[in-house]
Image (tube, rainbow over all chains, first blue to last red; front, side):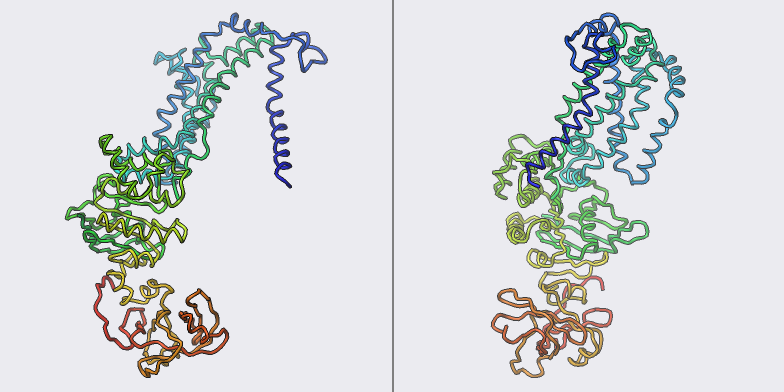
Length: 272
Length: 357
């Protein structure tokens, strides 16, 4: 087959996949934007006659949106920070251990995940009360990190393992201490994986529901707020839908900002 | 100027012995080559010298100071890795400057030194590029430049030519010699290629199975191998080791084996009588190489490879029986265990520096 045929097939495949992924998102957009008469009937339209942003304003005004948004952002960035602060050194150490030992430690890290979140959420909430962290962003972030940190550490172990140890050896021969070799060679070369870890930790916290709802039931994060408001019935399904879209915006921004750092060939030219 | 000694170096991992009782002295300005097949412990020895591997016992001594406990960063030596190990996120300039930056050298001095070493290696034009955008040969020069820039006490090289194509390898081999001549830096070089060892080394140490087998100037090791392993490892094409009883009887050797270098074989007899031995067999294959041919002959079930010069191509034909001649003092003798046992007619079998047994 010639090249044009090949790339044509490739484009067709990509279009099909894109439709598969994007169409549900389009539906969510339409439901939030269309007049309710055109959606809630026996033959809902795919292209609405007019669009309205009124539900977005309703959500922001009626739901007391801003403080919750700030809390959610604070929590998500705290979780990312905590995961990097402990995940990077931990993962680097594990990546340099003998295979078996490192593997055992990773398995051990995931022990917390074996218990259903809801079971440990209550004792964690009690501890947060004692520590004065109940209903605070830092409290939620600590609890969420107990779940996110093992996952992030696991991702970073893989990242650090992919950095050839030859390079930090070379740095040490060049006169660098182990610590200097780490931050001038291993760390910059692991950046792609670290960005991925940031995205994962951030997204985990942004979506997390169980721990947030139990540790901060009063002043709470956006996923919990949307649940409260839907169950209360404020603004109907279309308002909740508008809320979901708002919830997606920071995620899209974060991924767009970080994706240009996600390079696939960072090691080109290092060896041979 | 730096002198390096290894004293009773042993390395065991689990119950496996990697390096056994290694003793040697590398003198100032030496170009010292470790030669051996893969897995013989030569690269590990280099890594012990560099401090990347800790020996089980024994001492690494530089200028009289035991440096066993010094970390690699404190040993003031450089290592050119087999795969170069360039920092892919840094430019060529920053790669070369890295040892200086770590040492907190002044800015202007860094620029001057990098310029100097890169003009010496003719890589000034690529200083701004990333390692991924330069050729294999250039990467190799960058690795050497980075090794030289801090004026190390010792320059260690681990098979630096093995990733280059054959043509480039010839060029770089000459350049390495030139670099050594001009800097006078004590160099330790690891290779499995006997040609590199012969051409570059002021001294060669042949290793096998974690042991030092023989050490000395390359020509001595070539002329007077201590055993059949060294004999067949050094020289290209390798020395033929023949041990069929009929062959031994035919040339007047008693037991063990005889060694004949391919270029010691003559296809015509110049009427020197008993100064020669005769070997007769069937010619099974001929590789024409231009000015010479490599010929495979079967003698009493064993292979004998030998070279024939262009003028004598008419003397050989595939599938024919042929008698060849070897001067007696060019026939090596080995005992049953492979140890060298002089020559059929010893004339100038001088003692070489021999370690181990």
